[in-house]
Image (tube, one colour):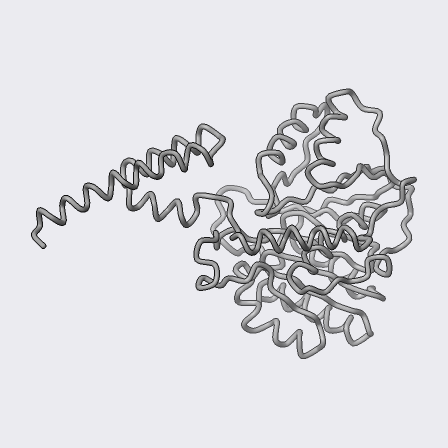
Length: 336
């Protein structure tokens, strides 16, 4: 074929891409800004825009995984997941706008507002690891960890050593880490933990041949630890040395150490993810502890993920910020 024919094919293909992608983007992108941005990319560089959109254009885990996720959630809900007692729930005496925020959160996550908790915010990296290791050392029944990044470094090995000591005491230890964020962990440290009978699984394993149209960058970004069903950690800190990554400006990760009835709600998040990745339905009621309900903190757990729409969660955060009268405490970060 001559150069003129190739030129004609290129021109026609560019216009075909634009014609096909125009309704696709307009119909799928509900927000104006992302819609206009993708249209600009596609019309300026059709082939590059098409490839980029197929890779990262949509919140898509893949049809098979989304269906499995929904089925596992339904099965888990029917299994009697750990829930707080009705006496620990609260119908808040808030303004009408405040009640709207609470109800919206219930619709997104299906979990109530829970009173009687203690919450301690930890903004020092080393102190957080110290507390976590101490609680693991004191564990008597189970230790459940779910983290986006679990590194094979000094911090990761320190937590791993605590898990090994707990397992040798007869404590059931389970670790769920993101397949991409913790890929080095699965190469070296995870085999050692498995030899010590610590159960280790990867979340959202990557298989490009099996899921060619799924977003491989949509990961499980949760940072969650539950010890004996009595203590929970959640926030933005991973199990890795604080110097990791490229930091711009003053970077502070915050973890919340929670005790009280809300621990059961956080535990349910771990158990659901564990069931989805392992097909093992842990008996929730045997993992629920008795709680002191005298704490001053009222907590509502709102789990999100790449299999759920993001817009309701964003609306919830914006609504909560507008309702704030005294303080706004972070990290305000969506967990996928």
